[in-house]
Image (cartoon, rainbow, N blue to C red; front, side):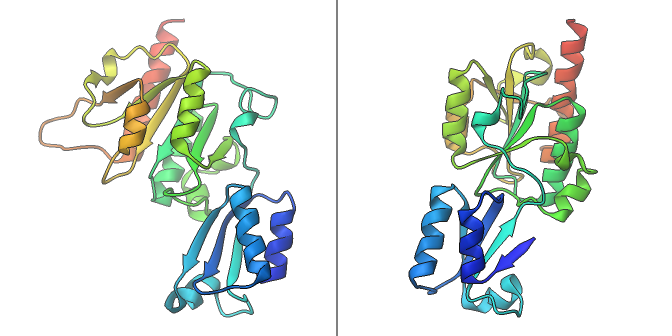
Length: 243
């Protein structure tokens, strides 16, 4: 859902509503705009600056006053909720995305994660696909069931998880560890990168290991959602085999 107008957006940010993103037209200024920016930063909410030529496309034709907020259609969580009654840890499995900007892939990954028993999906507020009707539909509704943790900085989040004894595993074509030989019987946070660039260098540096999927030499890589399915259900297979 979209909310436009300076006062409505400010009141929205002052409430506990799950605001996903704030868009502000370039060169828009004023006291309330300053308050909106400050509150959005304080809450770790993504802020997009929209050039004048894209205003109609982004804001529509109503009296938007150069500012708009997008509200998530469902509850979002933060990392402090992990391990509480809000997000109980049942299967020691998290999935985090690093630069996955396609809503179709986001939805498909969420569906795979939910099917594999993932405890939560971790999404950075920037450089990732927004939670939209498209991603929810592609997920077959599982995005409404799988807890989604929104974080401001993915590398800081992964560092914190490591301190809590989570094993940080990145999926990468450059990975030296074969997927089938990886020991998945531990607290695992699986990190998936973008289609074109893969994992960012900062995220790679934090990973405890990088795993790759053995492929026919005629094929360079799988789509990120296909790779997620292969890895997640190998985790399921291995854990069930070792019960």
